[in-house]
Length: 66
Ligand code: FES
Image (tube, rainbow, N blue to C red; front, side, top):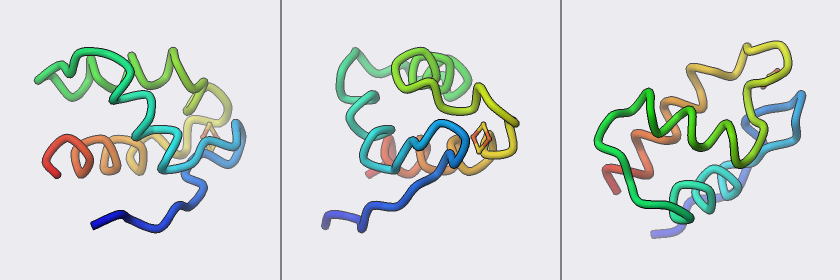
């Protein structure tokens, strides 16, 4: 079931759907940290205050385990 979109990274205006898109744009890594770096490169998320790091990680693991 599709999840409702919301903004995860306020500094860079990156939403849950942006993260989801970024994950589906490349081959998935099993390593969560690596996946985070890839999503960060593609979306620019977590390059501001860094306060969203944990929320981005949560979203990534949720999407990957969906
Ligand atoms: S909220 Fe994501 S870097 Fe500040």
